[in-house]
Image (cartoon, rainbow over the protein chains, first blue to last red):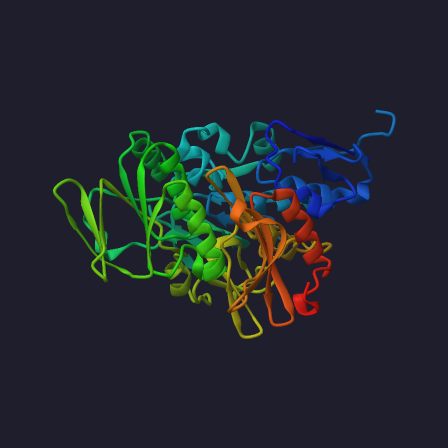
Amino acid sequence: MIRVEIERTTCSGFGTCMVIADSIFDLDDEGLVVLKRTLVDDGDLDAVRQAAYDCPTDSISYVEGVTDAA
Amino acid sequence: MIDHVVIVGGGLGAVRTAQALRDRDFDGGITVLSEEDVAPYDRPPLSKAFIAGTADEADVALLDDSERARLSLDLRLGARAVGLAVGRRRVRLADGAEVGYEALVVATGARPNRLRLVEGRDDVLYLRDLADARRLRAALASPGRIGIVGGGFIGLEIAAVAQTLGSDVVVVEAAEAPLAPVLGAELGGWIQEWHEEHGVRFLCGTPLARVQDAARGARLVLADGRSAEVDLVVVGVGVAPDVAWLREAGVLTHFGLVVDEDGRTSDPCVFGVGDVTCRHDAGACRRSGHWTATNEHARAVARAIVGGDAPLGPVQEGYFWSDQHDRRLQFAGRVGAAPRLRLLHGAVEDRAFVVALEDGDDVTGVFGLGLPREFIKASLALRRRQLAPAADGG
């Protein structure tokens, strides 16, 4: 599994992550990123990577190889 | 198997290419030849937070220590590529040294067009790199009269920062409105009104004719006789890639380095990423020039070099943004020849709105000012082709 991490102090609400994967990322009432789920399947790696690279404020990171129990 | 990739350029395209190569488990050498004397940094903040003084060098760095370690780059600063021997697969540097490659990725970006009318003046600034941004930031810290030549994104971003920091700003734009060549005259007109509400002045619709010495500073004189006296001139009149060294090497160039969808050039060992490229397909030349597109190019080129599955496609074709005053401008799609605008959210007079751009029966793009969440919804709908044109009168 992959653990997705977000940094709301740097997020400025571009929403690019939500356009890439709206099953994982959303924007809250303040217009800042929130996660719909923290752990995602390895099959979503490309989408998570792209969301991280394409975030103009570099507010998304991830850890690979996480087990469900972690 | 390729086991040495050389990347020419030291900005976003170079970094994203290296990252995409490692993400595909490429374990060969990656040499990055950057003409700059500083480690790779991100350019969008230079014309916004950096010149405003709210972001510093550390905030714009593209690589932290752990990512540098993961990428294991041979990063050579101050290394300017000036020549290429495609037969021997070698790049020649300005100091005469040569660097061999198996695959070469050109990611050198574009340079600001120079304005002949201000050649030789010492009160003129351009904005391209960190050194330019440091000079501009220092200049804007002491408010004065700023004349901005060019009402494109760079010009308007600088205008907004300068006005906010207390300068008196006038923008000179040859088209009928700022951004008119990019977004059409109607949207450009709305954006102009919004800037005027913030105190920025505009002289539009006539080209700049000359720049002469004034009693104090410089006088910008338009072809119709209107003029403005300023202390500092900032020029933002478009950019163009420097591809002469590639053309001389026999690689096909046009406006930029000509590439296909995968970033391949006319030479099987040479690839292009980002603003240095132009993409030719179906008889059309599409220039690059946007941050997100550079990321997409890098992923495509890494796949062309290493192989494997195709990367996810562009999620927002033609996406770009700009931050001006307290608002964000966002666009996705393309702009037709004479776009009709249809309001989707907000109100134009509130300077907070999202519009669809329509061309015949097509919705070609969406533009938003100051409503990022509504823009995202519209952008998703555009991508899913759920934005019906206004034929129903809606």
